[in-house]
Image 1: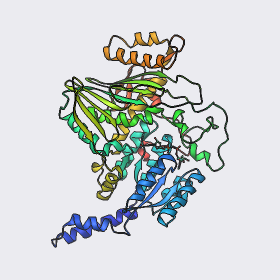
Image 2: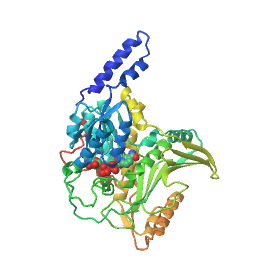
Image 3: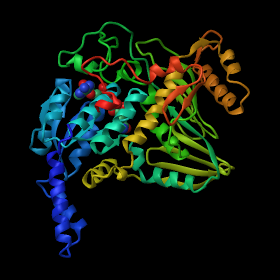
Image 4: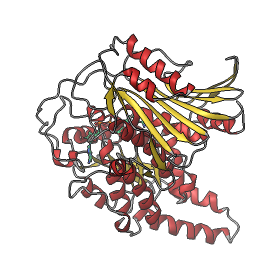
Length: 483
Ligand SMILES: NC(=O)c1ccc[n+]([C@@H]2O[C@H](COP(=O)([O-])OP(=O)(O)OC[C@H]3O[C@@H](n4cnc5c(N)ncnc54)[C@H](O)[C@@H]3O)[C@@H](O)[C@H]2O)c1
């Protein structure tokens, strides 16, 4: 399905017209811009998944004069219809409503799919949209597993589509400036970045068998996942904490900080190895993912350490949700979406970074220019950072529960590993988790071929199948040959 969309045909003819006029001395950029933003040349947007985050997508698109929300797609009819009514109140025009994304992607008025479904749908929704000729803005993490993330990149390149990842910090002036400062050696050599997702999360209620609200097409909601009854009280949002649909806080809040950490360290692959430990401590509920977790990503001479804390906690070096880059001459702490600060070795602040940005605007600019290299968060960046979260979870899920003392011993004689573990254990003790009686899950130290995105070595046979999932027909991510 590589037909040109209405938008692409329009833009190609505009470019041709602009080139013709340029020959007569009129600047082509001015021409093109004027034509592209005229009132009846708006990009048609479909917001796919319109609940929590989808609401923010709607607000962002409504702000833009060069775009129009032409469709809302949500498997929950209540959510979808509420949104189209709201949009009609605000704009006087009612977008179309679709419950099934396949129908939505057949709509020729749709130029862009703006995807904010649960994680297990991101890759397939993005790939189907790309195959139907749409450009895509897809929320983070872009995938639910490593392989399907790579498939979106391949589909985007094959069909020449523009695909932006919803890691909006990539467009924030303060973060951009801080990363530049780091790369110019502002705090010396940086070999260690520590991502922090310190964000208290409560229990989600007991595991059970709950009724699916009648407004929801549950077969489509489940999509690629196995057919199972609803086992958590709240269908929306709380899927983050069940493995079939979510990736824990590592792949929820954490992916933003994982992405900044990887960006700042200048890493363009998924590394040489990964190890993770943790558990779901402090309560028993329908959730399965770790609420307290450490991941250690090995990049040879560089390390990326990631800490998730879902129980009450103090900040670390001034950051709760943030990234600390440890340099030989000081450190940079990025503890807000719009930046942070640099400090010298004595902890004295030497520079502030604080500026916003327009992630949606950056996407539209790249769509208009038909150039993915203009994107601040191209799908390949989104894929690599999402993959790091999935790899950490694979080590964790292959782990075995054991006494905290044993975990500490197995982490070996490495100062950084020991320091991180001691803070992890202290944090749990502060939350009244009795580490004498409670086991900690320690995953294996897995080895990777970071460029090929596969596990190698001893445990590769066990770990490689976890790079993908068993897809439930017809919700199957195509293999490379069928993208
Ligand atoms: N970039 C950010 O800062 C940011 C912030 C919050 C959430 N997010 C991401 O946004 C996504 C959505 O999060 P949320 O909190 O809104 O979740 P949610 O569960 O509240 O909403 C998801 C919506 O998608 C709908 N849906 C499910 N499958 C669908 C399908 N196949 N087609 C159409 N609609 C479908 C659901 O009915 C629901 O209305 C998540 O992946 C999350 O990681 C990003």
